[in-house]
Length: 83
Image 1 (tube, rainbow, N blue to C red):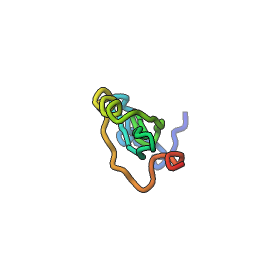
Image 2 (cartoon, rainbow, N blue to C red):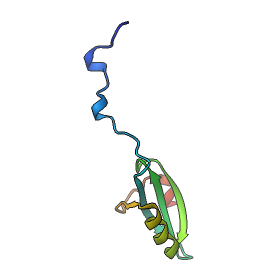
Image 3 (cartoon, rainbow, N blue to C red):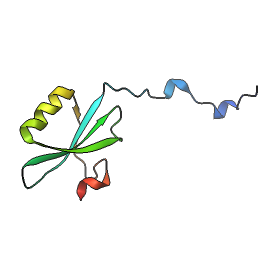
Image 4 (tube, one colour):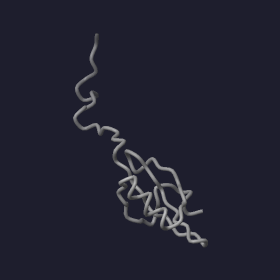
């Protein structure tokens, strides 16, 4: 069996493992009704879902999920968050 040249072989030591225990939230805004709009991700911050919760429920959600809060940025993880 032919092997690809060393320059084309993946360095398995540098490939990150998808860790489902790592969870992230990034607040994208507070809507007029006072709901916290945020992005929630598991494993990697770049793959996320958008959610809304009342402020108290958001705080409880973050604690229950043991989520790392990502800094707010000019550009959120998804472009839809600014709509």
